[in-house]
Length: 81
Image (cartoon, rainbow, N blue to C red; front, side, top):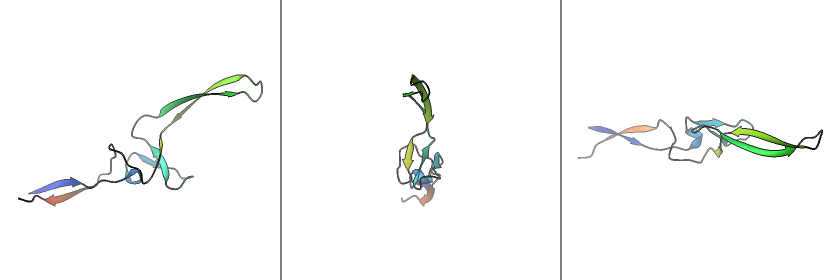
């Protein structure tokens, strides 16, 4: 009888990871919805405060890993009896 065994992977091999072309070895994790970030800056014209909103996905290195990755890397192993 054969069984499947997960052999793991890292972010660079995950289906949720999107490579950052401008930064080799880095990418964005799209496992969860993006995180909104609100920050304040000044208007270059009036000098008045401006509230800005930015929505980002977490940046991770290709060699990082988590418990939620989707690598589709299963191997068949023979059950030892």
